[in-house]
Length: 328
View 1: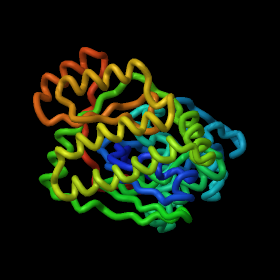
View 2: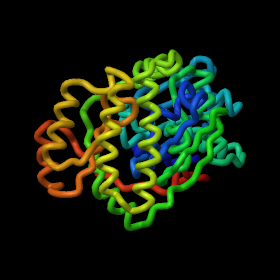
View 3: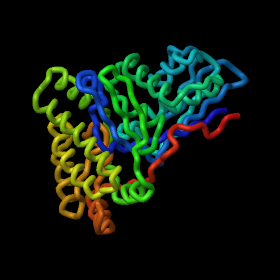
């Protein structure tokens, strides 16, 4: 039995510049944080039969790999050459469709487990690229580089993405004190809505490919803000992060009309009225989690958000990335 644990993530800067439609023309930049909310994947070889069992929100038992309905599990089994006698089960701290990278957490966790089962050493970077190719190229999903790489590496991580798609990974140079302050002041709340990001990401992809001026200029500005957020954090100027989050929010909404809505705009305005310096919505937008930067009167702020029907997600940064918890 092999059990892996893979972290979800919160984007701090550069979100959207990790999509091929953008970085293939301009290069991309991501600054993101792994958090201590996880996808757990368990794989096991049955001793009594050669059936394939996949358990998630559904439970599948099939004889042939082509019958597996879970797309990611099916294609990863094909990729790793395991076509029979396998049991896969998963448990997640966070539901799918919330913009924190759930599909890649599952994919990287399963790749990690199956490579370990086969006694194959595979680097975290290689597993991230394997996931990207399976989701983007085999399954045709609108996925960027951030989700696979943050699932693999966790931590306060910077991705420099070349026009050729190659990713340089480095840990941000952040002091323990700054990381703790940032963690304490970034308050995260669930909107109560889950959704697929594909529609929004496809719209963004089309707009960039067609070189729509407002969208492309907003993406350039979002990348620049990513560098500024990274610089502020590395210098320990965490208050600046809140202001930059607010600038990011204004430009992110220009990328797609589906990024926000009247309800979310109202929540955001109320958050600013009650002490937030800025905020952002997870993933491609349209649902998931709000992250607000709040330095003062956090108790009152939490009460206001609760009154709006938002549920807070308490968390800490994860600095371990995907790891094997059980191997026997």
